[in-house]
Image (cartoon, rainbow, N blue to C red):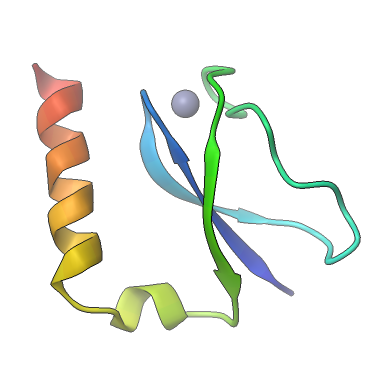
Length: 66
Ligand SMILES: [Zn+2]
């Protein structure tokens, strides 16, 4: 099953599983904010990437906390 990674301005980055033929997610399922699609691909790829994503998600947490 393809994993799509979206970024929500409020919730940060999240994975969303959907069919390859489904329309891309437009609004966050949690808060209904407009989301951006970051990447789509095989399972687990996103977790093996380097500091770019780690830094990015850290930034999101800081933003959410404040
Ligand atoms: Zn959200």
